[in-house]
Amino acid sequence: MLTVFGSINIDLVISVPKIAAPGETVLGNLVAEFPGGKGANQAVAAARAAGESVRVLMVGATGDDNHGKMASNALASAGVSPMLFVDPDNVTGTAIIVIDEDGENAITVIPGANNSLLPGHIPESALKAEFLLCQAEVPMASTRAAIVNY
Image (cartoon, rainbow, N blue to C red; front, side, top):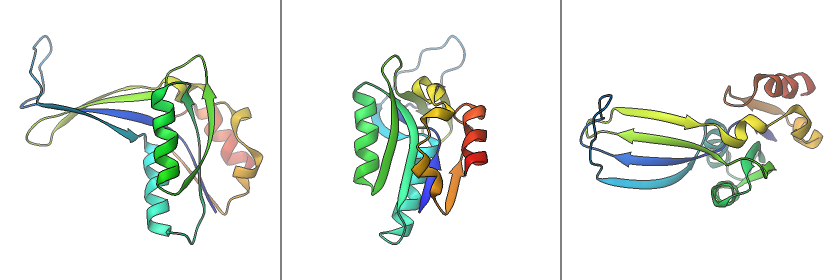
């Protein structure tokens, strides 16, 4: 079993001919929403690579909103077992990704519920995994607690 402990976001991707300079307005071509976050992306990649041979758990936080439901459903659909703290007072993390026609990007991240993930939200059963994968997109004290208790 692999436990991924980290961030869960929804990515709002905007396609533009060029990235706006400070104070400039650029008209976009396309906007799309995708499940994302370094933690969630790594959990999905691990589940795809392992197939049914390894159980993958995702421990993270979402808001009590449509984006949180979208993220949770996307994880489950990818074969990841979501073990999520749902913060009713916060939004699901969001990344706004602007990509120009050359593939360059500018990213703004609103951590939202990712910043609400506390050591007490880590299910003990999730730390009984053979492997623990962490990123630095949730509070460092929580990441340390996950590692120490692993």
